[in-house]
Image (cartoon, rainbow, N blue to C red; front, side, top):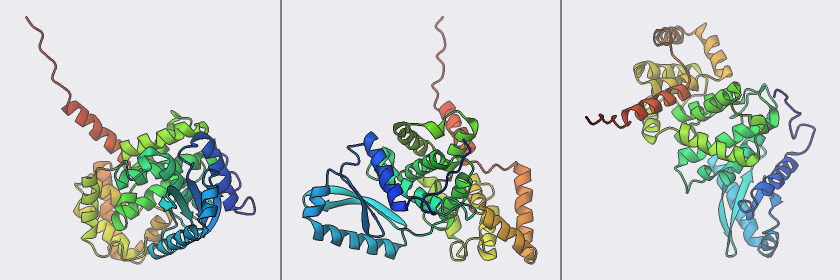
Length: 341
């Protein structure tokens, strides 16, 4: 599958209609999970489950107060979206809040930015549909990995495989892992989906919605990071004030990340996280441009390249996780019983 349809919102169907139509289709497969859902875009209701339409009409003032409070919280926190429960009357509802704002988390500016908005929507719908994406069922990191896995699978089903979603998103969330929110560090999830898509072992493009939801959950469980690994990575980069306090791709931050990588070059998790954090195409180009006039950065890049060559470095967390899983399985395999004589 290689097609990239015209993106929603760009002279075609408005985003609100895209979201509404998508939820209507999702509801056919998951009527119970979506029975109490309502969705707002920039504070305006764009979808209300038929099961709760009467309830919302009966509690207009309470609903409007809740929507305004959610909008304030999103603005204060800088969130592009949020999903969570709210009590209206005596009934617990699910409210998905969206903003029609630019967010380059999932695809680069080489592609229509509406793709990012749709991916944010699918991520939040993942929190509603995927069991593992419910924070009450797992930890926060697994929850975010499951929602991102669903967004990635749905992106392939919507647009095919000719965007830079999986590579770009893996790098973006790796930067978040070293300089932002560690719970969103879902790089291994994106890498696993890329491997599945490349191998053709799973026909992602034509996967039914129910199977897509199950696959997202399995990938999240298998390719989320143990919490001690996340903490070790963040502790290493938190020790460098320049990481996260300068623009992404700036010479100052890039030098700081590489210095941490080289200091911890024997820890493949810390090193690989930094390498991926510098992996976005625009960041790589910024580093290449800066090396022309920044001798220190040039020397650091040369030392990094030397190390990569010496250890035959691979950016794949998936391969490393699979290797560790196989080693653990062998280590815990019961010893064969000796035959009785």
